[in-house]
Amino acid sequence: MMKILSMYRAHIIMGLTFFLFNACVKESNVGSGLLTDDQLLSHTFVDTVSIQAITLEMDSFNTTGLSKVALGEINDADFGLSSAGFVSEINLPGNNFTFGSDAVIDSVVFTLKYIDVYGDEGQEHLISVSQLDEPLNDTLSYYSDNNVTATVVLGDTLVSFNSEDSITGPDGIENNILAIKLNSELADQIMSVDGGLELAADDAFHDYLKGIKVNIVSGGLAVDQGSMARFSLHDPDSRIIVYYTSNASSLSAEFPINSSAKSYIFADYDYSSMALVENQLLDTLSNFDQYALSGIGGVKTRLSFPFINELQGQSLAIAKAQLVLPKGRTSSVFENPSEIWIQNISTTLYTASSDENFYYIDITEYLQQVILNEQSSNYLDLVISDYFENISRTIINGPLNEEPLKLSIDFTEF
Image (cartoon, rainbow, N blue to C red; front, side):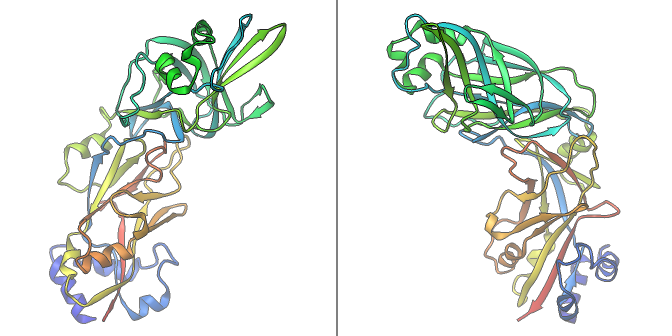
């Protein structure tokens, strides 16, 4: 054991010896239950090592075909202005669809099935639904920063997101539904080709009607205002309903959005004058006291552990290695996500959890692979759980914080 401790002193002698001593003696119970008393007594326990951290903007990523989509706008005191929306094709009620020659359109409603709401459910947003100018390309993937033109407005509706909302639909009361009333433009276009080849099958219909774009018209939100909602796009309750009359009967036709309708999510962020994020994006050489994480193409935190490579060839095994990440954000409007994930290594190499004050990430297998020179990645990218569709954000304490993030390691020799 003295051999192991001497190695660490040699590596971190420039300023970390006192910190390491404090960590081993005073703070070994951070995240109690992660390491047992037997482990702490019988093995070398190192806590708070030379972690380096930087903030990076997430690369745009493929959001094509996700079953969950986001919609909303938030003005956050730490993250600035962010917004999200989505694009989707719509499908026919069935092949060779027809309204009938005497049909008269009564109304058109676009409905979306709620998953959850993030932020202030009382915040009003102006939602715009418009028709795509060009069809989506079946051979292309669409990314979170892609933008397509949609100039024909089908509806502008002022709404607040409330996951408890319900409507009276064709099948009676339908719960957890956002309903947006559209004008007759889309239904008129469909009726104009009633009985034609354009309505013979979905592919022909997509070429004709192209699809819809759903976004928020920015409303000049004050700081710490706004909300975003997630919807289940492939749920049967996510569709366009056309109510019409034929032969003196009131009827309806449902144009679904399901897995065969191509779709993607887009997002936009403005970090201007947001010191927490903007300064760190400009300076990737210094450590800071806090770091920001946000989903759908937002920001992530990259951690590296320079001393770990020094352990290679030392006949060591890691019994337990755990990142302990203090939560640095308390907001009455925007809740912290339930978990933080690692983006750049296989999820089979770690487990994640949290409590009121900390996030915990078990990276035992990852660090053991580094020591055995079986792992090529020398850093870990921390992201919001389900970052490709999750609309939440959080802040974690960095290396310079009075209560810093920690790497707790329980070693054994072999």
